[in-house]
Length: 161
Image (cartoon, rainbow, N blue to C red; front, side, top):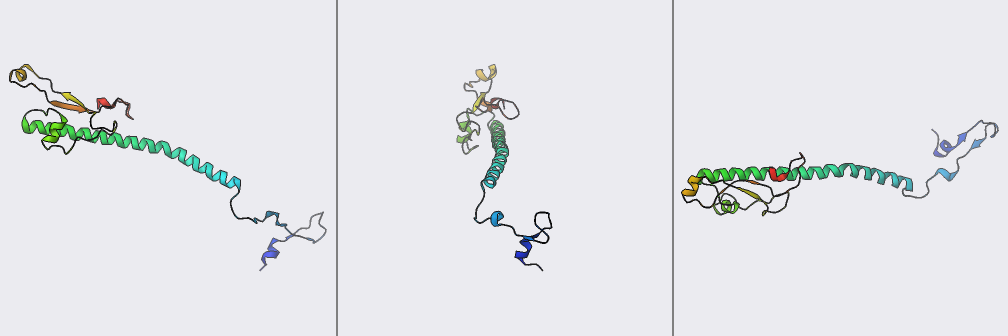
């Protein structure tokens, strides 16, 4: 088995070395200082930048998709509660606050797009002549939409959901 020193020696029979002369490597290839070279750091930071550049749009789309899913769920639950209120009382609630006051909701949910619970668009019930003659003065809400005019990922406006 060869020692480390002998493994470093090169035997060459080339024209400029004479026959059988041993060449030794100089210390120029040895790393005498610890740490990273500038090129290694540049390569690492470039790779990190590329990965962040690829991941950031996916993250932003994911959070937007999550907000849209929360909005759909909130609209579904509140529309279901409006219908449940109508089934129980045979009239539509006067406002979303009525659903809270009657115990159908704990609180009015926050619209995840506008980040406010005050921006819901309440669609009022259309009263016919019988309702007007019977003394019903305040129309109830039959539907609601988000108050945001922004566009969803599928291209529709949130206020039309």
